[in-house]
Image (cartoon, rainbow over all chains, first blue to last red; front, side, top):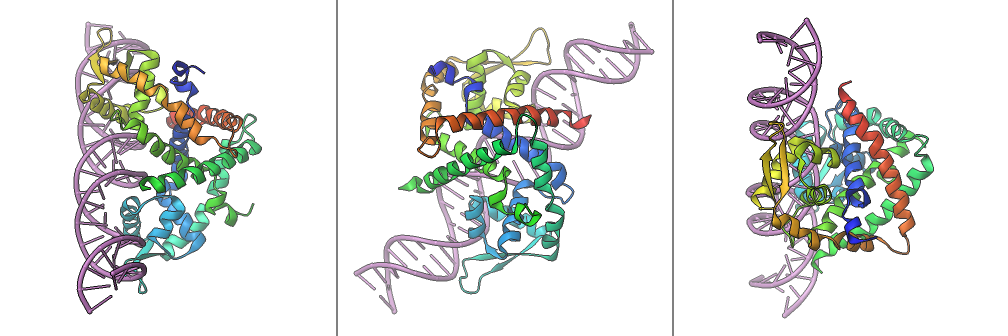
Length: 154
Length: 154
DNA sequence: TATATTTGCATCGTGCACGATATAATTGTT
DNA sequence: AACAATTATATCGTGCACGATGCAAATATA
């Protein structure tokens, strides 16, 4: 492909990823706003539902987010009475995050959401096998790219 | 799949899209910061390089962004002397955006960037055919999802 | 031709993202 | 033990995203 052609929006590979990411966040909105959650806040809950009490660092590793994003986000969630922040006794630097009853209780309400969303993304044109292939490629890219962005300093 | 299982991060389909989107924006950074550009600013340039003078509305349609995002972004780009804003004579509501010489000249520098980035995303594990399949699925989703988010009010 | 509706853009407020920097606790080294 | 390096978190500044709202120009309707 000529360079000229590559600069056209329709031939870009990153633009559709960027757009779909935003559009999916929007698609999540009607489901999440019933609970007063944003999508990143929902992601934090996913981690805590799956792994229980975790440090900010551990949450960040799983979501590929740094503390400069997570710290304020988690403080907002604390204000919403979804979780509690406690300094670790073993290591006074760590802040351990634990769900409140309210945070735990949202799990039941959130459970059917991914299924509903996936369903809305499936059609005659896009079948489940396509989605699995897509996820496969993306997961491989995450492995490559997250490696790279960590080692920026080396 | 049980609902319990679906709530695990590793089984989510939207999370990898969200993560890869952010990681790719980061991957673009070293290439774009030479020109002092952010990724969304680069997208605006792509539109203007391809289509020439355009209204904010037209740019928004192509990038799937509204004016509340584009207006400030384009004003920043005007300050950087990349483009000029002019009210349309035919329709005083429209603001027409036209590239300056500087904005035009960046095209040559930006031309090889998508190729380089794509290359860094290809490996033994992820081949070009996988990327084409991925883009195909994403483009179909954009068609579905952008339709939906427009018709929210109906 | 008045008036209602729509359209294009801008502004405001809130919440991410993220680079840069700061700080205190911990660990490593001499 | 004293000091250097690392680690975990927090804060700051900037730039998106986006819902809500406002406003003026254009268009549609009565």
